[in-house]
Length: 463
Image 1 (cartoon, rainbow, N blue to C red):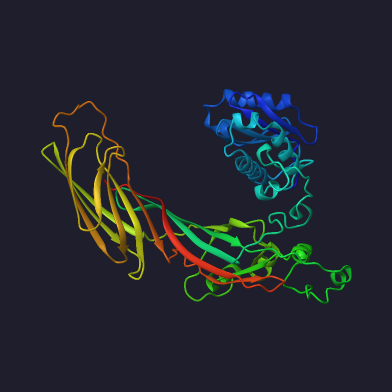
Image 2: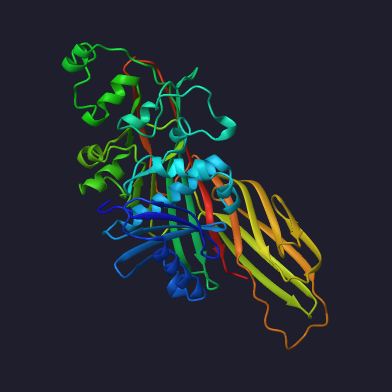
């Protein structure tokens, strides 16, 4: 971050300040309230809703959550994306402490809020934003300790996202490669939008064993053999002092070689918007494309990415509507799976829109079950298992009122929406080649990898 935050303000929906924390003393509360009053006056104007604004030498960056606004001000040239991420981290920490972030929960916990703001930012620079670490030494009244604790190790070393003294009976690490397919098809059957949003979701249950060493051994590094190229210097103290596990993850060659710009065998995987968790050593990734990290305890997103190239639909739908007389309507639907036969989609749910005044629906399907859901104005077709290279059909007949208002506007239909999951399959073709867990005491850890593709915003405007 190039610059520092001047102050942080938490406002209610009317622009009144609930909590403020001045870090540098160069932006006053009056300036923030004046800016916010102008913002509320232009609430209907779309152009005035930008989360980043500049006025009279001050940059204002804010987000809204429930019935409160979180606003930061700065007179320096700051990284706006970093500040927006920091505000969202503040929201996550408050939700961890108060279950829900809203005006009432802030008013009931003023003392804890100010303690958290002091620890999360120092002189305008973000510090510790991991809720699990903060909760080790900032307690609410319900969980306050009688004996004063020393600060946890994560506050005093480079690995601020992992605490010490973590114990598990079994050392396991789970990695889920999850991809969501977003697809939009127009009424002519043409693909308007297609993208894949992926994430490497990890759950780490690895214990940290305390290691007692002498100053001589730490300086010489002889008995522990810690001075090698496998461990960067910034994480040396944490690995030696607390026995923290060090993990390495490798992806398939098509991703690695494409990133390096070298030749690839087969179709290369062109990933966009790659983002890593803060635990990943970016210098190591830039040098040899190895994802090396000290994992936080519990669940976290190790990496997120996007595949913007056009994606072939996984399930294609053909729909035809026939109107008889004025009151009887028939729908013929054919759903076809376009992925490989060795894979199967599970929990397939298709919503077929129908008019809101539909009566007496009669539905027949070649697979699964279907019923009329009046609260959704749709026929809901459910298939528990949909193998690849298969097609199933649905035929529905329903009636409409015989008398209609000719002056009424034409009925606007919702698109056909699909939800499904395909285990053991990824659209991008990304694969995990290996996961290694290195710990100085040499304990064994079990890695588990799972692949799953699911429907995100999967819509077809065919009816």
